[in-house]
Length: 344
Image 1 (cartoon, helix red, strand yellow):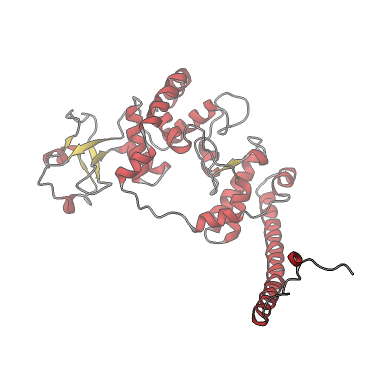
Image 2 (cartoon, one colour):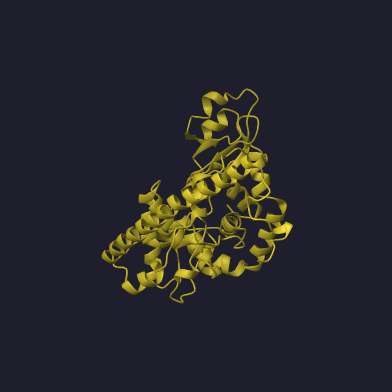
């Protein structure tokens, strides 16, 4: 028998008895955990497969073709990273000033101005058709995905299936999964090309499947509503969303304002919508010194950072931006970005 060299001793050789015993115990525990975990993982996989079969049966009842379901659901697996991100969404600890600096740096404004000029003809055509300014379309495009650069690389069908199976918000995501299957069934995108955020928001304007079905537009007439790679479809879908949600032509979304020194913030910040004349009677003025638009009759005061920071009077179009994303930080920033790009 060949003698073993000193550098290749058996695992416990050369150790004192307690250390060797501890190593053997760790090895045994590892085997025990493996013996328990593997059947659990297999059971969970079996449960998911059974759940997916139920999804398939319901999708067929909803009219999705079997061949679509074969291509979309075969081999679909849960995505653990999706659950991790869903459980660990960051708390909103940024002040509005910090958020604005992060989301709307000068470089993004400059890029937006360049792209606005590059696509001006198509944007003006679409803006005229839907009554939405090119600047607002580009602002949403820029903030949602940095003008199409960061659309998300998660497989949408797998992400939605993961969230629907998980159970925390299963009803919502199960519905979105069926909507995504309808989109594939209609031929707008191949299953493997349907990518987006971990939560299922898709394309350059980050539509959830339900929003896609309601608002997406085939502007170039090629038979596909392509919000992933066809810019005119992206622009028209964005404009259609706003127009269908109540956007009012060239009315502004709002204005940054200055509050008088004696303004009673505690009393007024919860006042809700009031006439513009009433706000002016309290001493509120536009920060740029210009007059408020004569055709705006009512407004709501928004104080994203308290009385010592930013203050805005917002109008009907602001409420439409909140339908897109229920965040004052988001809506205020989109509005200011659109202003910098030359449109309400």
